[in-house]
Image 1 (cartoon, rainbow, N blue to C red):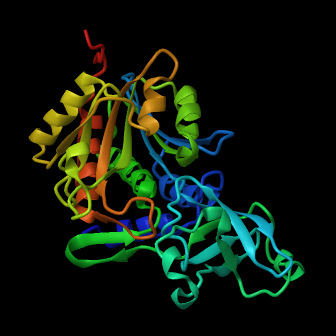
Image 2 (image 1 turned 180 degrees about the vertical axis):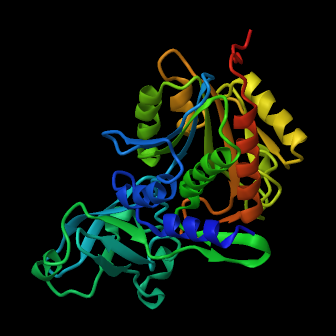
Length: 355
């Protein structure tokens, strides 16, 4: 299990609202953790936050985890006081009806629910039909548009009203573990490298933004940092539940260690170094094959400037993009240990040219 201080950090981070484009609350949580440790903290115009540890003239290593989450946005208010909304990122319209939500205004959190017609009132032929997101609405208990407009504005972000909880056997569940747990891991690696006395390489730990709407923060922060190599920490689909076919993804099990991707998006020498480090440190590691771009910040970072040696380390996650995402604490700890060890191994003039 995570130590109390680390669990509390993760809980505060996960529960800080940060739909894509509205990441400031989460970034403030991370900054509070890293300011006593980092040699320098910078924020760019997109909202990416870069925490640096100086090296000894070696490579510039970038670790990245995105802090934005999926969510919704207020778009329209009816005269009767109901709120229509749009999705921020990939929200499944199957799961939103009947959920409790938080609307995050400039001054407060407004509680609400996404309305759902009672099954008694739905004709039998329509009971298996998915309600389109554009037809779903929020009820905050108001009776008029004027009443609603005193509380919130068009464009306010919305999140599911759930937080981090422990289940059995060291499992954690929450919304937004994708990918705040990545930003959490990157932050803890910086702390571990600092505690070890620093590395030869300069370490830049980046909490990126707007990944869920097009890898936008990874693109701009990669250009600004200009790293020699980059390791992205993300979630990856666990395939150990009854309703997931592993043949299209690979064997990925919660609690069996972080997942290293292998394929066109991944530098082969960096991949080998991570595998060797895991073996040296006796860290469990799972491997999946990804024959094309990964759809993560690793893709944008690999293509930065003249190209960057890139790797992708995933944490097995069940129920991605739902309010009940699930992962194992031991996988978080294994990822922190692996990345700390590999950062300390990078040599001054180490080459990652593939030939």
